[in-house]
Image (cartoon, rainbow, N blue to C red; front, side, top):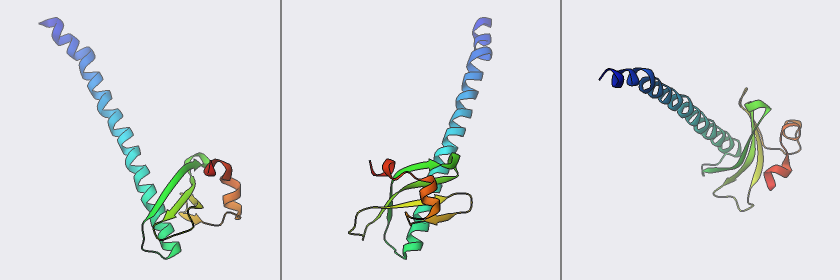
Amino acid sequence: MTTSRSFMLMLGIPVAFLSVLAAAIFGGQVIADHNRDSTIQQAIASRLDTASPVELLKLQEVQYGYGVCGLYRTADADQGVASFFYNTVNDRLTLDVKSDDFQSYCNLANLCS
């Protein structure tokens, strides 16, 4: 009986604690990524002045996670996809591929492959 209790105290409780801690950390990251994606979708819809849903494709984190490059498509667009850069620090959206922000941080070859 004593060895069973010591096993629980020495191994079982720390493993359970670390499992709960890991779930909290990685679960928080998933929620943060989902919130970031919905913020980008809302910014694109607002800039394009459309009520149709915006689909994000091939997202890339750039600037050590402070920016996001990717492709987007709206449900009512016939032209396919277009590129964007979103700066998460100041919530600035760039839809022009010829802009300095887009050319500095986004690699079009990676997005289109």
